[in-house]
Length: 133
Image (tube, rainbow, N blue to C red; front, side):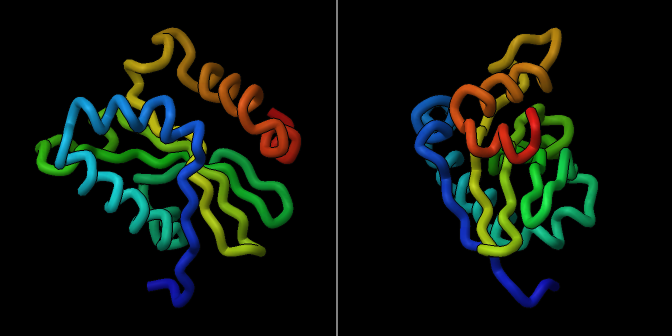
């Protein structure tokens, strides 16, 4: 177990867009799911050692991570669920910013990666610059 917890910030863009749809669709299960996502992000170092999180890019004290998650109570693995978070980890500040929370079906089928990169580029210009997205 890592000895340091990271602070977690859910970005307003994530709240306004995809999170509100998850909350409406899954009601009380979503509250438990979001609590679990935040707990996982607090312990991001441990999760990066598993197949549940993928390191996309690193630049200095920053890392861009894709995290798979499942809705609480549904019997589907995080990988199979198609639900993802895009995170920016700031190791110097010990903070995880939740940039995007989405289901694969929320994005165009042809190129999920390109679509979330476009969202990061348009909504988080500072992060797009750090990772040269």
